[in-house]
Length: 590
Image 1 (cartoon, helix red, strand yellow):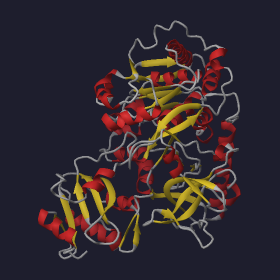
Image 2: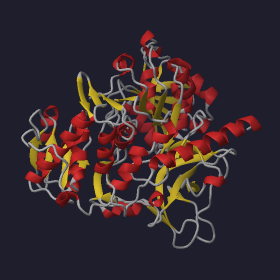
Image 3: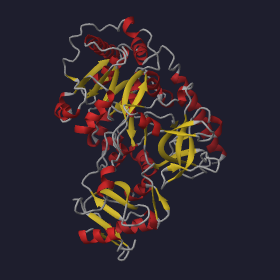
């Protein structure tokens, strides 16, 4: 990095950190400041500003708060008290946010349920929340019914329709007897992990943590009351429901809500609604890149986009094609204490944390054993910090007296909380939060996401990053999406690479094979390819792999076309039952 570039990077980092911390203001688990207080402060400042817009439906800040207050009085009428839980199973809408904010005003916890879940998975989320009331969107009533037989508490169901809480005549702020003594450390929400590798976990979100996420990007993006933030990410997840909503509600801007993400309608909406920013996850950007070019995609007044997961192979193409002035990429998780922001827009980086900000950015990388799926420890039993450009697991120190270092854990299963805590890391007796993510840093202290722990696998004595292989695959013309994972083959050590692809018609597998041989070393090339009509994702567009790994490359189970990169012919060959048997028995040399 040259002197001029370094000065720009340092200036952006310092300015970004200062702006972020100023926007955070006073947040503390022992302070008598809650989410409801933040909302009411904004209502006092911007009562007639548009707070939410959903299609033709608009709520001012005053109207939004009135709905929240009616919800609080509805809850009190049901006998709900501080610490009780209500589950919310509904599609995106302004009322969605008003409901959980209203409940928070009287200390009732709201569990934000993933709307893609049904049956046992849905029941699991409601059960671990211990909710006695569930508010259900009428559009999801049939989906909810699939879970009812597996529910342990048989909660009362309330339809979220035009009449919900309408009979609660009072729109006044709940009285002191309902709010007195509430502190930032009291539980506000349960927000669930995506469940990409197993059942979702319910992250415990006290008021101080919710407030922090809602203020997290106010400074970095320079939010103001004239901003209009387009939100098509699900509101049950922290990126869309807390970060994207909060950046507007903290500064009097407008949240433009869509029930569901639509790639084909996206740019028309951005233009028509005069959006000045939107929040993304990486796959949302990839969906947009896969669309044919259209005049609407550059007719916008965006000044910034904020999100995470924008891969290096997409970053610069996305910014140039759609004329995005600023990309604010971040790294973090709903429950974690490791957070970074890429203030200077370095393509592909999730943030920068040179040594002089170590006290402010709680992030270290430890050497990681891919096969053992555990950090590497030295002769003294302590972990070893990863070298420059060496992938390591990101960990964050846990300290009970500093809010930036806290880890609140999960509800319903203490074992899940214990599994996320790594002890004796850099000193005997210390405790660190395990992100489950492999990151690396360069010599200039930029950090880059590499892969999820468990997604990186070992083959032929080498570590293979599924994320990096996917980048090479999607760079090939005709490959729209690539979900890469490792599968066991016969008695071979490690796991062989496999890729589930969605493609354009007429994909030439021979040319794809030549592309892979050119761009990847032999150990990283996927031995198996599965062609899917669409890739299964979570509600936040993360790829699901657990079923793909289980099904492997068995043609008696998998109905999609399967191919094997045959080393004898140098071509992708259809996997037949006979070839599958030979591969499993070890008769085919790999």
